[in-house]
Amino acid sequence: MRILALDTATKSCSVAIVDDQSILAESTSVSAQTHAIHLIEMVQKVVDMSGLTLSEIDGFAVGRGPGSFTGLRIGISTIKALAVAAGKPVVGVSNLDALAMQAAISSNMICPLMDARKGEVYFSRYRHENGNLQKIVLAQVSTLDKVLLAINTTCVFIGEGAWIYKKKIIEKVGPYASFAEPIQNTIRASTIGLLSMNRFKQKNTDNVVMLAPEYIRKSDAELGFGYKNNWLK
Image (tube, rainbow, N blue to C red; front, side):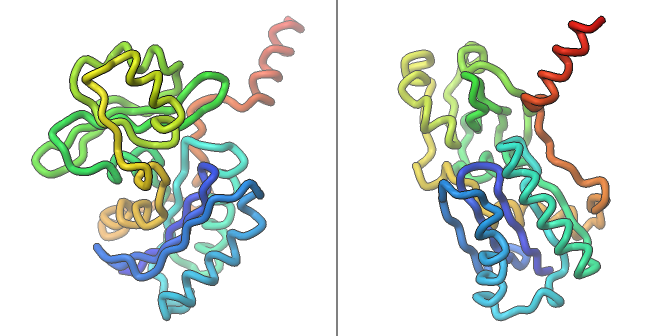
């Protein structure tokens, strides 16, 4: 099964085509420009690199969040357009799941951290059990201090949040903290694709019309609207 996957949840933009457990082609870049400028070009580049055509793709996968609100909308709208045009199924994948998968297999707890700004991070926690990655804490948004209060065992931190707050993490949890290699902190589209594979094989796909970003928290606009409504009551 050939899956075209992409991720635009953070500053990095990644597109890949995977086939079962192999990567046929992949391109990842980090740019200050909006992903909308170069995403379609990257999709075409990866398709050309793979030697396939879009009609030979069996399904489409995308990182659905959490992450940048604008980035997620760009990625999901693009993958939905491709899926509809090709008449193929689509699967949305958690970006935190992808980061956890990119951490080296370990008996230690894994804590992916994504920068949520405003002094907060998106996070969840995982463990490898019987060779499978198991989520033990649901995806949430919180201050880093609250996240670290719950760390009482050796934990692998991964993601852009782990890199940004590495010094503070070491200060707070000391010997409990270990870190993934820097290259693993960037979400790869190939990871998104490989994580989606079982769902495609089980025909547990998403409704292409209903597929939406998993923001976890409200946007600034929504928060502002709520505030105004409360004031008017």
